[in-house]
Length: 98
Image 1 (cartoon, rainbow, N blue to C red):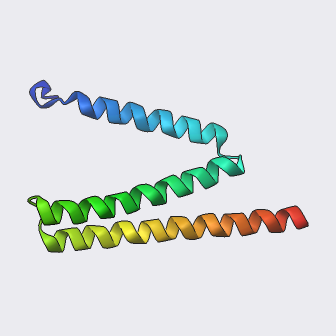
Image 2: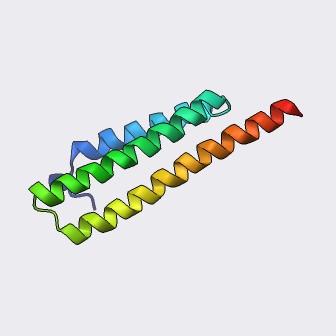
């Protein structure tokens, strides 16, 4: 049974956003610039999240240790994305040489 009093239209907006993002990436993923831009944007947003966690732990109602844990997680994701971008660039150069 669906409880409509708990329905939040924000969920619909998020689902539509992710479906559109998926379809766009599916269509253009073969282009190197798209993959690199996606990697850089993802890493940059994760580093922004680290800054926001630090800010809300200092000036908001977020616990310091929770901020450290979430910051560590997002920092690792950012490093992984930067590493994948670097590896992708190297592989593209090797494929062009061969």
